[in-house]
Length: 78
Image 1 (cartoon, rainbow, N blue to C red):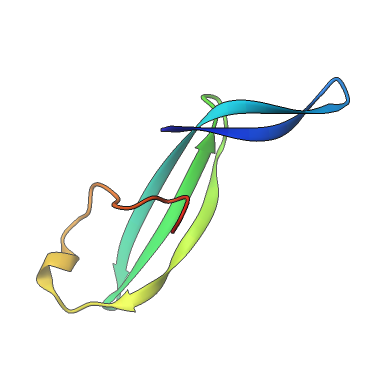
Image 2: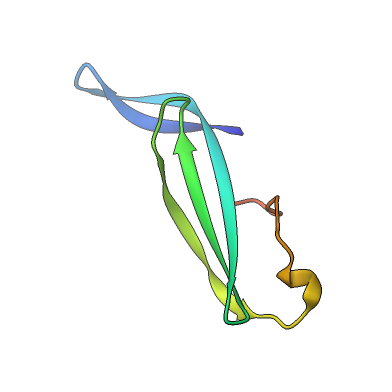
């Protein structure tokens, strides 16, 4: 979880507020191609929404076929 600043309207004025942001990375292997989908949630009560898709790349290694439980890297930069 990270803190990010967002512009929000408060009493008809734009104000910058900090909110916690959480990211999830989901990896699927379909026909030997890896596809990573990034989901993001802003705030504690915010909705989970689509953020990004990382382009597919081919794989033939067994280690890549196992289930990934964590995401490596920074989703904000990927």
